[in-house]
Picture 1 (tube, rainbow, N blue to C red):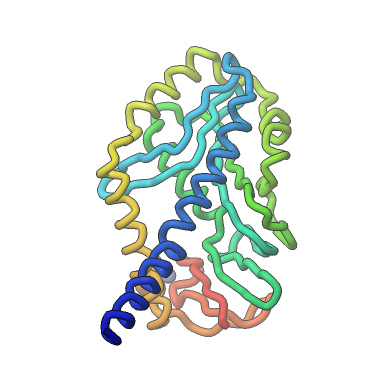
Picture 2: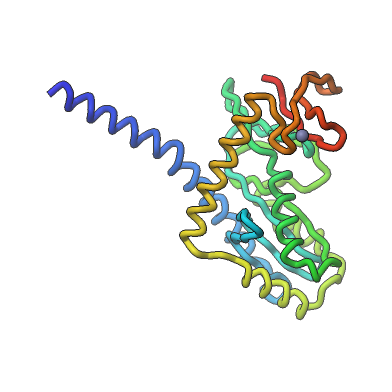
Length: 252
Ligand SMILES: [Zn+2]
């Protein structure tokens, strides 16, 4: 009898842990993306071509992009985040922080994440090397942006359409070119569910490996050692291979 109770408790904790770690982030992410895609639907169909939740496979790695908007001035690449609390961050740092009262958590710098997405699209659209790119990070949750130092737009959902329209001023692409670009991106989009699951697995593996290396003070980007350095924002770990490699890690 006792054994059975213990077993039930363990199973219960296992399930709630799984929900907290795996299910909730997924739902939150999907909700944020849904919020942004409904906003984007309000853009005129003849002026803006939209792709939501795109998955590209380039070489051996896959890249997931929340939203792509193609218009006359170029391509908007939108990364959506759904966070609570206060968000702090710097355009060039590896991590940003989320604080909720005394609770502190690191998150990957979404601007850097989004640059990876821009490069992936550039690779697919290599014959359109004249296209201009506009990366945007959107915070769709209740999170408050505090001390975000950046030259690129990091905004709330309600500023998204205004930001896009404001940056869409130059006529760089004809509608025909926009359509060709959109078709090409659609062709490269893997909507396959199995690929999607593999992508999630691969990302988790990459994160685990990066954390392992950071613990051992090895640069995850180039494999050289990470050494303590002093900068104008205090002490931090930097790559030995600087200035060739600019990887940094905060000391905590
Ligand atoms: Zn390095």
